[in-house]
Length: 330
Image (cartoon, rainbow, N blue to C red; front, side):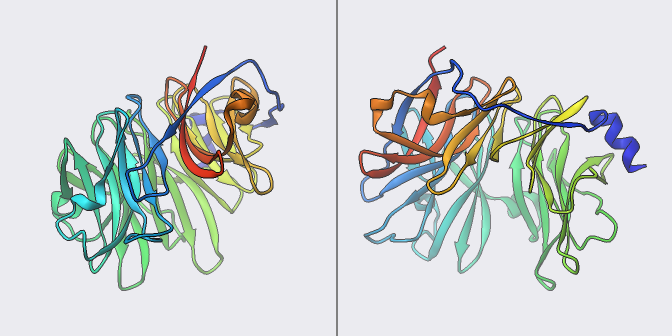
């Protein structure tokens, strides 16, 4: 049954590696300047409006080593953490998800851990919105559907995947024999992928949900699904990272982080300092070879790519750390 489902979704899975090339693609680099008192803004999510969700970091001052979730729009960075009514007693916060409407989700750690939804300049606690106390969201699509996992505090594990849609919570199925199950991503068609983990064997399985049921994608034991685009193609992290597509799969040469609807993948690879990488149209590009060498940048991590080919990431420029936005020049 599992093999039949995999064949239906992707065809026969055959892998091939992608050649490395500098190619002809070129980018301009924009440094993402943090507010005063912060060392840098590190973007993790990028939408099709060019907005970004990430975190601010500081090595000195009142927020030293306590990152704050932050939202970038139209050249300005908003410290989302400081919008919290209990910001002074909340230790730190981290980015979770962002959609094309500019709705952002971030996680707050402190006296009371929780996930917050930022929309049109206002905050709302996600569990209050959903009428629950045990939901840990991980992703949101453009329709506002949210997925994640239920948190079982008694067992200290993420137990059941869920879908929040039309104001209601739907609990999704678990993969039999696996203690922890989570939904990690949802595309704009409502297709959901995630992972299942067995604590006894430490086995991790990439899964896709079909009619609310968890289906094993049949990949190696240490794999989990990171993302799914609107074509239904799945980005998988494993010892051998893959982009699963109908008719076959692509073996990636770097650690992936983001996927867009053009089947472009960004991430990083190599020894420290790693280099930001892009897979596009059958080739793998070191993004440092695709910018002006006189710019002073070392592009270390590529975190996300939107459908216009813009890339958000983090690196070093002129002796300081900084977030960046790459914009294609062709």
